[in-house]
Length: 430
Image 1: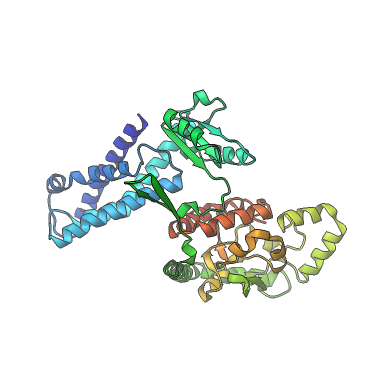
Image 2: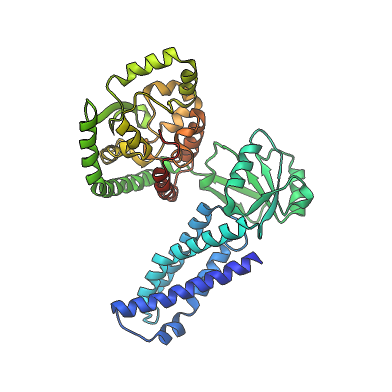
């Protein structure tokens, strides 16, 4: 039933976009002007075609996270509309308006994603169309997985404690007998395998089937070891950092003046941090602490056991007396990190990546060290949108290891978008 409602909503959204696109074209006098009837008669099938493509991507039959569903919608519109546009250009089919195709690509993804976000959050919060899921093979990650599912209301799942009430089954880190798994396949329509905090790069997995034989290959790809993908990421970093430096130039100037007027010392704080492959780089930040802050830290930790334990766990102090009044504001909204855009432009850092760790933290990184230090540190990252400084040191390392192993450009774009509300709220920043 929910699938049918979503299909109807998408068709209404796309035909509404069709209607709006035509009147924008008329108002701006773009290209050759035809009547609205002409476009309806020749392109009425376009919204239906898009919905069919979305159906084959499982948009109306499966439950995805907001991130995964948005990616699938964007991919469908990009590939589908690009195919139509290519066909129209090659065969000079004037009835297929290039303008209408372009508008559908630019605005279609946004309208569909935004509409689904509002609708699903509304109905699932009301308890409508929720799917009951039962988690099998509970281990030490049970509470971790349960919290993620409950926090992601967009999934539309309700966890039940009785298997007989379940619509779907989730196997947590499935290591149970294959015969038992086969029984579940015969009983339930959907059986999901959950790999909590897995070190396997599952985001870039491809399954290859040999249809004539009962054999399948699972290909796991590490994108950050691909030369072409590294070049793509570097180009993205250069373009994006230049744009941000241009936009933030007034903030940079005002911040520099405020720092100079409110405390003694330099405007910038320069510190050596391990970069890619552990090579030392100089990180630039706006100074947020008083002079001789490192010496003061030693004195503070020496005389206070509670603060020593806090620093051991988080490698930070929530109420750090070394921070200046203006520094607290800069840190809360991450303004102190803006100068790192020049590190990105220089090639020492990336827009998105693991946080730049301090030299003395390397010895505490354990088995995560080689993976985390195999890439450039980032101005923002998965850690920043997952709790920032409220996360323990080990939790940050697990999250950043997952990012490195599962990287793709779409993940970077998602993190950048999610960074904006995280920075504005100032949650977890100190």
